[in-house]
Image 1 (tube, rainbow, N blue to C red):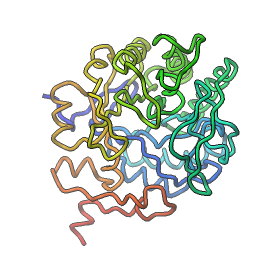
Image 2 (image 1 turned 30 degrees about the horizontal axis):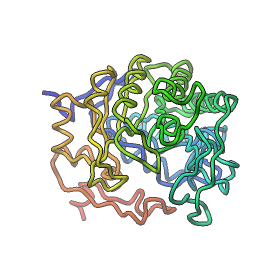
Image 3 (image 1 turned 60 degrees about the vertical axis):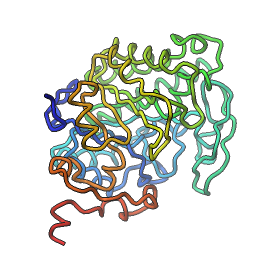
Image 4 (image 1 turned 45 degrees about the vertical axis):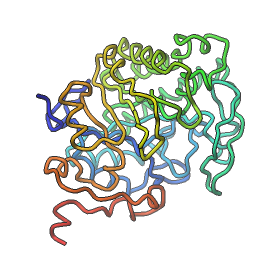
Length: 362
């Protein structure tokens, strides 16, 4: 029976366990998207994860709409990431960069101009800006030239990721961001080759993934989807059909892993009443399948043991428990995360959570 603590080979990487660190936006970079020294401490503390998926990282100024989030579109950002990846590797860990374009969820006040999306739509709720929360503005529909340019931005970011020392890249195609806006018929109202039938709506996902594979290799290319339910105002009329097709397309391309965020109705973040689609995707995707959202030791252990997942990614538990793998191995209690410090600057709630030995010593 496969265990959470068994090693696994995923593409080019041999990983020491199946407990992965999910991407977690923390807002500790500079306004220019350059990683800071404290980020190296944060990620190195969590290097016991089988694989760290970095916080969502902007591929361009246009696509980055979160205050103090990092980027990978210029040399200063590459240099800022190098101490982070080096610290993870010195601690024995592995880390991939999650590549992010937020589409219509970017507010112009962050410097990217009018947002771009699949169609001219406006996101609900409000955007985070340096001046506080503000209503989103209407996005413009991406032209074919925009699509080619943005695909090039993904490729440049992937090239920069390897130059910065990352072990691969993950395409963020989930959570209502740009690729997800193209995938779902609630936000994709196009009537060209990128809209309408499912095969057209997965075209951007396929083309960007192909471009990433050409740049870094399929064995270092990963992806993330959020198939069950509406997220940040983005939904689809037939998510099972759509995301099974998306999973099949990624499987045909032979990427190393696919992470699925599948929250339940009681989820602490973006809850959903839609049944998980992972069993259908499991049948058509041959790479490592990674499940995420609200897992605990028993549920994670069961999903790996029954073969539905090859690994489980944990989010909030890793925020408050830098030694999460050892805590799970010992079936020990977990620290509770301080929500108020998720995005605040500085060390508090970031690198000051105690490990089990530190708690025992205290």
